[in-house]
Image 1 (cartoon, helix red, strand yellow):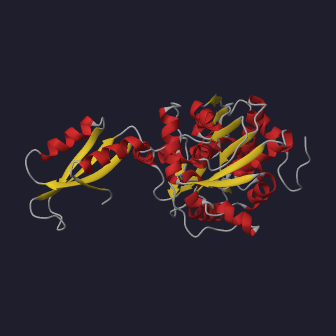
Image 2: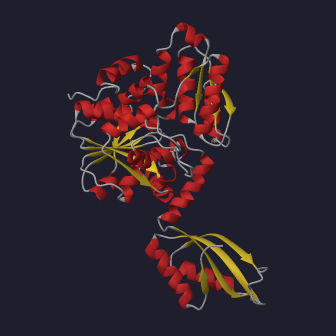
Image 3: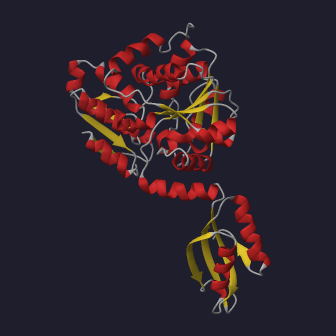
Amino acid sequence: MTELASGLVTLADIEAARDLLSGVTRRTPVEPNRPLTAKLGGPAWLKCENLQRAGSFKVRGAYVRISRLSDDERSRGVVAASAGNHAQGVALAAGLLGTTSTVFMPVGAPLPKIAATKGYGAAVQFAGSSVDEALVAAHEFAERTGAVLIHPFDHPDIIAGQGTLGLELIEQLPDVRTIVTGVGGGGLISGLAVAVKALRPDVRIIGVQAAGAAAFPGSLRAGRPVRLAALGTIADGIAVGRPGDLTFAHVSKLVDEIVTVTDEDISRALLMLLERGKTVVEPAGSVGVAALLAGAVQVETPVAAVLSGGNIDPMLMLRVIEHGLAAAGRYLAFTVRCGDRPGHLAKILAQIAEHGANVVDVAHRRQDPRLQLGEVEIHLSVETRGSEHSDRLVNALRSAGYTVTFGA
């Protein structure tokens, strides 16, 4: 065991948190993943925290924090801000511990997360367009009502609770060499790093952020938490504009590397997890897998990627699957310009069928002023077997004399 830096959460704090969580949270499984193993050339495992109570790791920290409130504090209720997972964790923990909860969520938060949060007994209010703006409203509510703010990441009890995941991982995979996990405000990776570095200082801890919400790289370069000017990613669960002061201290001292992935990388990862792993994961929960698939980080195996949550909106899942298919070259949308005469569409569809692609959607457009008289544009969406198959199909249509274009 190593001596950790002063001021940080300790291994003893995390072990005490595990005692509090006994019989409350699940010891989530680790599962092998063949596509990642094949790509990395060594064992790759998934820590399935998407199977945790309330669908994510967040209940670990929320329960520890609320359980340590005094009777007087619990009588005033608790308040939180969240895009969904922390909301559900707080609502569940508050119900288990006999206190009321109010949760501020960004306008436009996923409907299933709103419904689940209400289902666990929380009163939901909406404020702002991001977790940061919702957090401001939660602070104001706490000052006005006396409710205790349960911060989503920047509190020692939260970090200690999330760190129990690290204890489990080391026990489940004693030979692990690299652990990769998503990073929003930094609570999970902070607790994970404390536990793992205390028990196995040789294990590399790698954090992954969405490129459109990557507050940590710039903050680490600056040596202090720096707020992003804007956020834009499908991974709403890790869309946090500024690292916490406490989590920044942990990450800067204990985490080996922070990398970023694009929304396209995330879509590919979600598709692989669903198709090959039969696993439902939300975008924020898949970024570790996305980094490994995209080659965004060099790792030593055995490697473990944390699937931090599984609370995905079904409508978003539909869009992500389509986007993931397109990113993988298996979903092709294009436009063919040809003469507006009987039989042309049948010939084009015959060409597509001949090359083994499956037509998903067809639409005609005759009103575009760019078209010549007697011309038509046919918009087609087709399923293919990958990028090479898509290229062969497009080349065949062009060789047959059709004008093929992409985009609007």
